[in-house]
Length: 309
Ligand code: 13P
Ligand code: SF4
Figure 1 (cartoon, protein in one colour):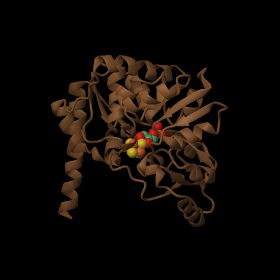
Figure 2 (tube, protein in one colour; figure 1 turned 90 degrees about the vertical axis):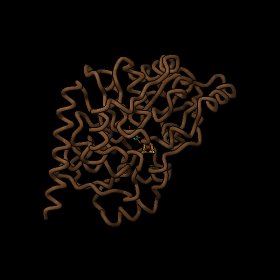
Figure 3 (spheres, protein in one colour; figure 1 turned 30 degrees about the vertical axis):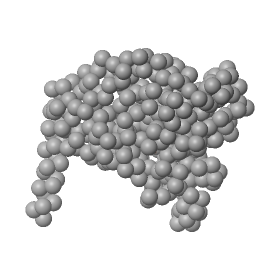
């Protein structure tokens, strides 16, 4: 009994300290929908990759604490180079973003000189710098359709690339990358979940494999799913993405019932941030994420083109 009380008190006092430091530093805390519950609850804003990029671009705060993974903090640093951008867990990387290098992309561009390059924001700053435009899971089709080119080099996610290809007459050439969290969701997972919850709608993320997308009722980005769950007249939903999103669904739409499509859909990298690290980061103003100016200037063009759509 004593132990439970002390743990609660520690978490609470940590939260208080974070809020106090946040004021002193004129900082804002941005968190992705996959973050652990305590981090989502302390954040000023929780959202999907596009929403977070827009927030990072329009901040009056001096310090941005990015509770997500490295490419998200890099994007914030590119958009707001004058601000201090902190990534509380320096080892919070995205394995998919590391599946293509700028050198590999340059080789692709030489092979397909007439193609435009669309890169998912889940890429390094160097890869963005080699790309014509960025996209996220919520705007990928719109971005591809906005381009004049008939051929599109799409990096790094083969699943998002093949999803986009369903909605365009352009020839999409996807790179072989994938998200280990979404790619391991199987059609059997969908069958099992549907048997358990026959009245539930199946919502999946476009990072899922094509055969899983084929079985879904709807395909959305993370915030797209939350919006759909809140607005839909349906009561039950099977959620095909990282399980952290269920916390926001419970908070934003408490009258709905949401079940994970796979309880194995956990991004360990997204879970590396916790309250202690957020506090340490605000206190020491480290680990700071910066992007070399020449790379940032080129990457910013690709990100800004996306934000302008
Ligand atoms: P969104 O939140 O933009 O849908 O992205 C999902 C994801 O995997 C981020 O790493
Ligand atoms: Fe990267 Fe997938 Fe984790 Fe998102 S969920 S950070 S795409 S590994």
